[in-house]
Length: 224
Image 1 (cartoon, rainbow, N blue to C red):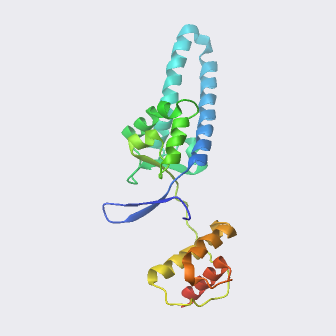
Image 2: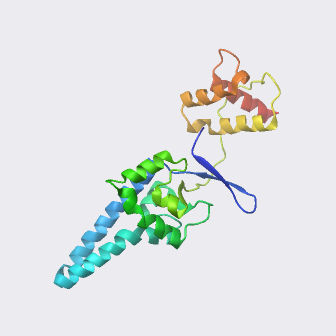
C-alpha cells in the first residue's frame, strides 16, 4: 500500500525487497539516453564526413551498433545502468534479483522495436500499466525487472509525538507494522498517512487524528 515493493526469496531463504521503477523514471532515463545517442551520431557524422561513400557506409554501421547495443553494453558492464538509468537511480536485474546478463539484456533490447509499436512505445507503456511488476514486453520475454538502486540507509526518525497507550494488546507483528509505519511516515503526505492509519480499525479511537494517534502508539511501543 505504501510503495512498489516486490519481495523475492533467494535459494538461501533470504527475502529481498526490491523497489520497482514505474513509467516516469524509466521514460526520463530513456530521454537522457536518447540525447546521448543523438550526440554520438552527430559526432560520428562530423568525424566521418571526409570519407565520402565509405564514411557514409561506416557511419550507418556504427549507428546500427550504437542504437541496438548501447543499452546492452552499459546494462551488462555497468551494474544494469545506462547513463540515463544511472541519472534516475534505476537499474536492470533478472527477475530473481541477480545482475542482468548478456542474453537477457540483448533479448530485452532487441524487442524494443515491438514495445515501440505503433508509435512512441505505446505497446511498452500499455504492458507496464497492465503488469504489477511494470514490465514491458521485452522485460517479460527476457525475465528482467527495472528497480531503484539501493541507497545508503540512514537511521529512521520517528516524529516527536506524545506516547499513546493502545486500547488493547498488540501482537508482535502488529506492533512491528505500526513502528514501520511511523518510520516511513515522513515519506508520504499527511493525507495518505491518515488514510493508511485509518485501516487499523478499532485501534484508532473515534474522532482522533489517525496518523498522529498511530505515531503516538509507535512511541509507546518503542518506549516499552
